[in-house]
Amino acid sequence: EQIVKGGYDHFMLKEIYEQPNAIKDTYRGRLLVKEGIIRMAGIDDNLDRFLNANRIIVVACGTSWHAGLVSEYIFEDLARIPVEVEYASEFRYRNPVITNKDVVIAISQSGETADTLAAIKLAKQHGAFVFGVCNVVGSSIAREADAGAYTHAGPEIGVASTKAFTTQITVLTLIALKLAKANGNISTSNYQYHLQELELIPEKVKKALESDKHILEVAKMYKDAKNCLYLGRGYNFPVALEGALKLKEISYIHAEGYPAAEMKHGPIALIDEQMPVFVIATKKGHYEKVVSNVQEIKARKGKIIGIVTEGDVDVKNLADHVIEVPDTLEALSPLLTTIPLQLLSYHIAVLLDKNVDQPRNLAKSVTVE
Ligand code: G6P
Image (tube, rainbow, N blue to C red; front, side, top):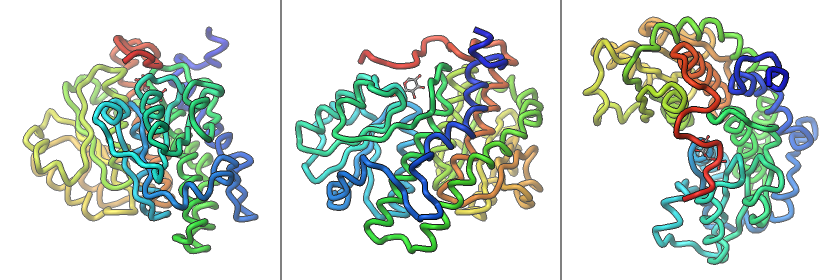
């Protein structure tokens, strides 16, 4: 088993460190920066279905649902296509309105999640076009979908999903950019800029991984917390949800993710000197607003750990600790801000002596309802 883990103590850590290559594998052959082309047969062959869609409905569970939430921002922001993101289990049971003008994107690492599979069967019955974003080749969801794109992340063994998440976001970003170009909602220069920046992401993920030692020190300081709050806005709101989920899954510490501005409608009541608050505050998108959220936390003596852009000053001045990630475009920032939160959860779980790769009560793939 040690050989399979490639010298890492756990599969989860190995998979976190595989992300630069996994993301590269995801865009290899698809992202042609010089030519200004995104090559994806599953989209090209069905372009009309996408361009004539009333909306995109994303169905997924767990971490894949969080990737879906990130994609909502990207599709709407860049391609101006309305998106709804649904828990597959809610969607399938609530008599949803689905038409043959809808495109349903099912996101699933395993391609075997029972609720997601049932949701796409229902969507197909109503005439929707179903596109699968799966990791496992030949899986049930991949076979059931009308078309799809694999993430090519390689096998993910750790129950807590890591590289599946970032590679799902990579595929969904490629799709959004391709559609934005096709429907004319993105300028050529902005499109090209996104392509160039996406190609640089693996190197920037590597850079983000270099904070590992520092993150271990931060983990030591907060491992005994009973509750943690994760905040982010815009593209990084789903990252806050995913950060909280990772901590819950493997360390069994209660954690909640929230849109930073919603904090004042509830969670702020919980903040005291015992409460670590992880705030994603990258330089783009709503930065000043997040800084003012950080001030509110500080005024209530919460412990602030900022996930910030390299060279940040404002949050650094207010926070107890900061963890830096390289600068990138806002739409791509989740691919970087996720990394320190994965490492943080990993280290806290190891320090607490939990079973990182096989947390209690959880399964890698939920094939029952
Ligand atoms: C389980 C796993 C999660 C995963 C979710 C959805 O709960 O523990 O890591 O995100 O299922 O799985 P899928 O294979 O459909 O992405």
